[in-house]
Image 1 (cartoon, one colour):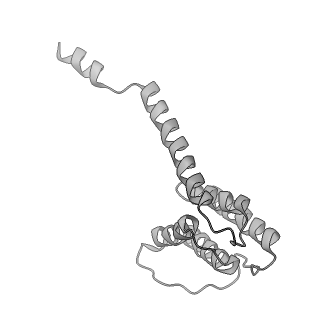
Image 2: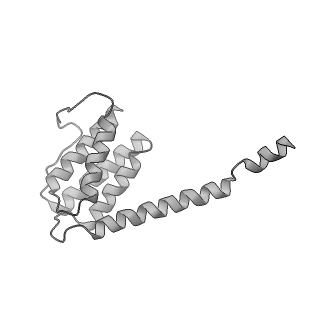
Image 3: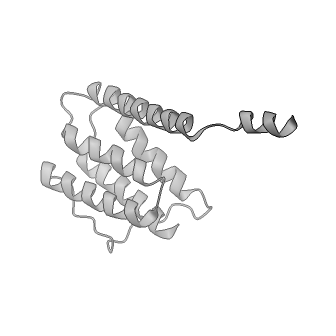
Length: 139
C-alpha cells in the first residue's frame, strides 16, 4: 500500500516538461514587455537587446557557451552602434570585488540595463557585458 502511494506521489516528467516550457515562454514575454517599454531614443537596437537577454540566459548555464554568447552580443553591439568601444577579453578591466558574488552582481547589472525603460549608452552596455564576461571566465 505504501509503495503504491509513493509511486503516485512522484511527479511525472511530462508535467515537469510542460512547466519548463511554460516558464520559458513566460520569461520571453517578460523580456518582450521590457523591451517594448525601452526608450524610443535608445541607441541600442532592439535586436541587440534580445541578444543581451540570450547572453544573460546563457550565463546561468555552461560558462564556455556563455562566453561565446557574450562575445557574439558584444560584436553585434559594436556593429549596430559603431559607438561602443572594442573591449576584448584581453582588455584590462578593473576588479571590483573578489568576494564570490562577482558573477551574480555582474548579471544583475546587465539585467538592470535590460529592464530599464531609459535609454542606455552603448559604451555602458559594452562595459557591463565585459564585466559579466570576466566574471564568467573567473568562475
